[in-house]
Length: 159
Length: 159
Image (cartoon, rainbow over all chains, first blue to last red; front, side, top):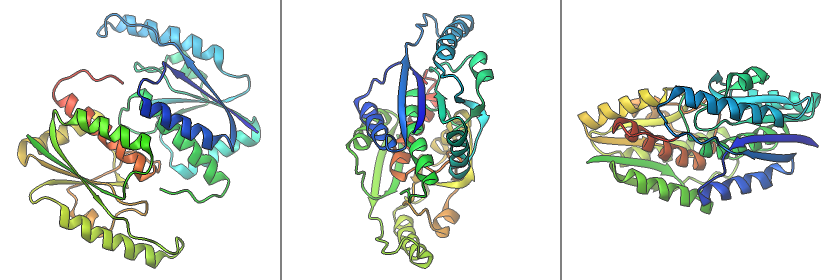
């Protein structure tokens, strides 16, 4: 069975997000062994201090890098990445399933991801030109992954 | 205050989606008077029958058209529309707020929107190349709208 590691920063605060993720995780479990790793977000004192922010995402980035499973196909979510449609994404995921069998998806903190993480990624992926809160993005990612695996399995998937 | 009409098809089934929408609706209410109109989805007997599907979205489309407030700036969500980033969207919404003060957003059913509705729209808008379930899209739309109004109000908005 495919190993799917999802690395995220911070815990979900809203109950409806927790419930949504837990529902999608259950559905996904028929396709993959899901391992969600929640890392602690670095505290930022001054949201206007770019150096402090860069420092925080560098520290977060190093923690992320240490959690990436060896040999995984690594996908970093970033707004400047490349967009693909649902069919193309299902193909890419299918290729990873067939080759390494290990997929690692990374959602950064509200300040984004460090360059080191982006450079480590095999695929820099953008979901939308719009910015979404990283907590809601987690729900969206689970939904997208569930859809991808369903497409790959040839299942009808309700829009 | 801005009149924001959101036209959708079908009721939300999952409690976490209902809770998410209700939370965002509360937040949005400081920026706009929100009127959500849920229309009934047409029943489809045979999901592979294109003529039946076209017929259903035409009927849904006529119901949608009858609910669009006079003089509103009309936005139809469709995957083949144009994407904009969060700042550009906030600008477009700001222009509509300043001109007509009435905004109407339309999310079709799982089968999409009729051409009549797309042609009526002032802006055919795509959130992503990816397909999302229209029920989750409703939550995403509320979040995007709340973010847009917050950006316009010069508020910091947490990602």
